[in-house]
Length: 102
Image 1 (tube, rainbow, N blue to C red):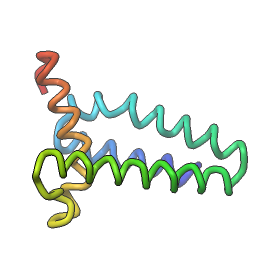
Image 2: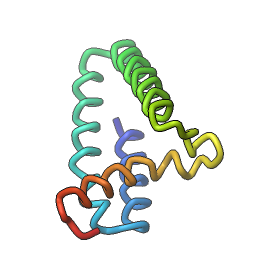
Image 3: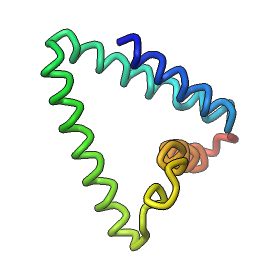
């Protein structure tokens, strides 16, 4: 759990460097993810690893389906930094839809 917390902290710092307001929006999502990891870890490492693998594959399939619908190639295939800021793009879009300044 300690490593996951450090990874989330690093992600929040990276988000804060890009945008303080977006980092505050990312905080509840990252906290929920940490909580989920803690709950799965209570069942043991094999359960955590299996659930993480399944969620990763589902998310990756969803990503490629979404990009196929858009007709665009995913940016992270060209630049790994785009993989890190992709969730912030989604949050930025959500902020824009609700009229929140970021």
